[in-house]
Length: 634
Image (cartoon, rainbow, N blue to C red; front, top):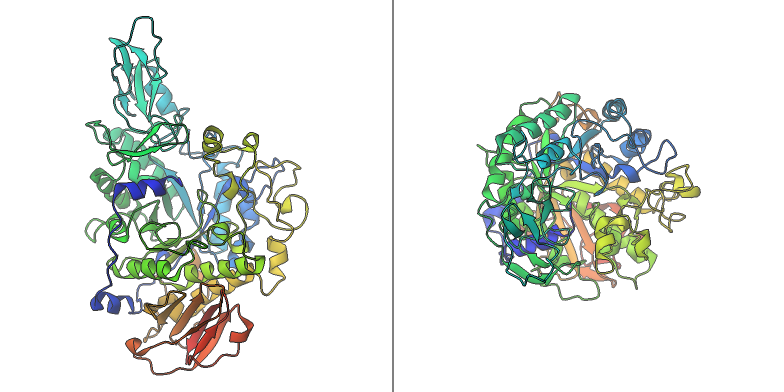
């Protein structure tokens, strides 16, 4: 949900010292999979509804616009859509402040439109996964309006309320500070130093109750009190409402923040001030509490009671892979099927990167976190992600301003290759497949994201990664027939768009299509194990996907969606993936003996370097700058 959760993750726990995987762990990772559960191989495509396709000309994307573009998503190879919140909302946080969990916001359509989207998506072999925001509601939700009305109403304890503590003594002629309020027994201030992740104190005064309520995010997003069983029941009822309609699962927003320490003790401070000047707390008492795991086990039981392998994705930002492991739960008490592994795509702490010119495109970083995901998760499926609605786009984060467009495109192909050729499930974001860039507003008056409005210029908000999808070269890039859209279309839409890239065989879009096709149809990329090679190479990332030895096992029958697609598998061969992460040619010398492979003959399946198309031997293989190579070992 929040880019600032990355900071939270770093504050919660120190990054563990990197350790080499044991031989047993390495051997286990190299083994092919025999489990074809759909979500273990899934390509999830996040859609920010207001930015994908406007079907009615109001300048805002909607559900019917998504339905219109399902053929495009099927052709791309998407298995599931993660649909960011489309529930009724005052739109303070653009849908993450929900005022009704069992309806559709009119600006996005109706329940009938949603049902049509769901049915049509199934016809295109695509599942729908909804964003479920459980930590908080909108302050306009009927639950909160009732709760805030008095201290005695039936929902009075559905949120976190507190009387505050006595304000420091001050002279009689000194006016109260902004955080002082007159309670029933005198002037009071918030009960502790807890800070909102979205700037300022996490406590807000309500005069009708003469109490403070707690909000981890915006003040318009009061936190629910999950220590009240009635709250959990109401939220589980909302989950069942959508499961009954046929959704395949949920992406759980900011799920680690569900519980707070009831002691309300002060949290340690980070020593930093937020964009508003308020001291930042480290959130050790307001995120990741043990009760969250218990809640997830109960939620998992509800979801698992439905047929069709429904599943849960969790928005999890952890400081290391060991911490990520806990969010899967256990065999006896499962929690999340796919907690997001954001270490590979977003994390920058603790991996010893020294290349200041390009601090994230470093082979050692990728090698470290891919290896950990395969050896430290006890065989659970990782979910890799490089882009979402809270982060500047990967095109900008993994490139530098001095690189040419061609170099940036080659780097984007490297990112896509990692996303789709590792053993992990894959999560992408609309527009990443065409190389959409971040368009951060340059003037405060143009900012729509409240984080940017209140934090400018230190914090400029998240509008830049949420601009409308770029479909074509016509006005508004084909996103909307309106001359005014909720955010302006990116200025580079004439060159970066679906129509232009569809006709270019060397485009990033075509590269993504080819990778996803290989991922689905090649038995090794679909089911094979993974083994890192050339582990000490600082410039080139190389890994092997080991080939399954038995016949292909069909995906579990009976579950709707991509399982019904035809997979025309060919004979399985080991697959080599080698990625030059530098701007200079790199010659690699590979030892495949650890995989019991003696052959040095290869057949390129996909490469962006013309010189590699006719390569047939691994001996002294030279990769051009920023080259990607996916090749069969014959």
